[in-house]
Structures are given as C-alpha cells and as structure tokens.
Amino acid sequence: MRRTHPLISAAALLTMGFLYLPLLSVAVFSVNATRYGLVWRGFTLDWYIQLVHNEFILEAAWNTLVLAVASTLVATVFGTVLAIGLDRFPWSKRTNTFLDIVLHVPVVIPDIILAAALVVAFGLLRALSSVFEPGLFNMIIGHITFQIAFVALVVRSRLVSIGREIEEAARDLFASTPYILRRITLPLLLPGIVAGAMLAFTLSLDDFVISFFTAGPESVTLPLFIFAAVRRGVTPQIHALSTLVVLITVILIIGMERFTRK
Image (cartoon, rainbow, N blue to C red; front, side, top):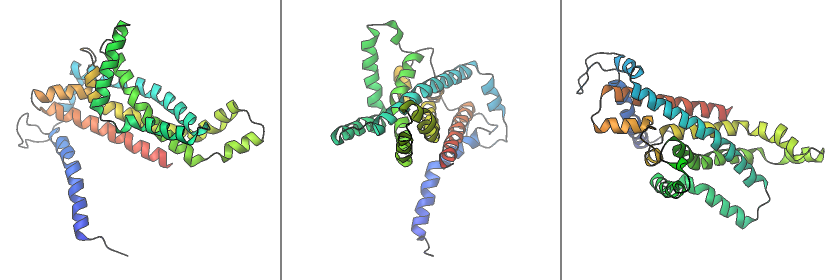
C-alpha cells in the first residue's frame, strides 16, 4: 500500500483548516458570554435566545423561507421538464451542443452579471406592470432563473445514468408516453429530482447578490440582514445567526448526498 507524501498531507490539512476554521471560530464566539472582544468569558446560549425574540430577524427568516420554498418548487418543476426535454427529444448534434451551452450559462456566469441583467429586465417590465417593483416577487423570479439550470443538470445526469432501455422495453409492450412518464421515468428520476430541489433550496437560502439587487424595503432576507448588521459591527447575535444558517445548509447538503447515494 502506497503512503501519501507528508507534504501532500500537510497541504490537505492546511486547506481544510483554511476553509473550516473561520466557520468554527464563528460557532465558538456564538456561545461566548462576552459581547465585545475576543476574550472567552464562559459558555452561554443567551445570544441564540435573543434571536428568537428579535422581530427583525424573525421577519428576515420568514422572507428567506418563503423565497427559498417558492423558488425551489417552481424551479424543480421547470428544471425537471427541461432536463427530460433536452435528454429525450431527438435533437440534432449541433442543436444539442447549443442547448448544453445555454444550460450551463447560468451556472458559470458571475452572480453580479446575472443580477445586473435582472435589474435591467425588471426595469423594462416595471413599465408594463407595477407587479415588478423591487420586492419578494422579483426575488423569487430572480432565484428561479439560476435555480432551473442547477436542477436541470442534476436531473439530466440522473437520466443519463438510467438510460433508455427500460422506456424502450415499455414501448415494446405498447405503453403510452403519459404512462411511461408517470409510472417509469418520474419514479426513477425521483432521487435526482429531490437532490436538485435540495441543491436549489440551499442556493436560494445562501444567496446574497441576486437578492441584494432585487430586494425591496420589506423583503430583507437573512443574508441581507447579516450584511447590513456586520457593517454596523459584528455582535454575538450575528455569530449565532451565521452559525444557524451554516448549520442548516450543512444539514441540507448531507441529506442531499445521502439521498442521492441511496
């Protein structure tokens, strides 16, 4: 058995420390009794209790939850339909390549570019209807625009792993397209659909840039609240809130990984 070179092991440990020590330090300070400074004054959960009684944080948490759930539901449906259409329709090779590029654009494009494009689009739509004023509705549309691509990529990878043999066998047995979709394709796609939905929910939960460009005065989310609070100074409540957001994100990622593996 070959042993890993010590320099490689050291580089791996340093990388892991660089990534996770800041998160660990935030969690530690969220249970520190001191309000200011870096001196340890003892263990306390007062900062977490104060979060429950902070109406501004509760409102931001509610906006975050509504935004994440609504955008995830819509993006999951459209992303699944898009993945099935891209993989099962007999596109030409050139068209299929073009659609692949279009599908990957929202994934690789910087968030700031997509956010700026959404601002321009909503500005044009606002001339037609007041519904597109900055606020939660615009934020939901903005999140859907980048969530669809992530859901479609996850579901499409599941389609590739399933193959077409089962569907072709069902057609040989005179099964109709709606029956195949309802009783074969969608049940086999369920792990991929759930994984894509959880990924979309996590991305929406943590998003800041697109939310910042499309939010209104009454649609502040937790990332926006943390950003505004940090500019006034980092308090133990911010440490506690950041720890909870990270913890929820980690739980969702672990659940997605376990469900996908199963």
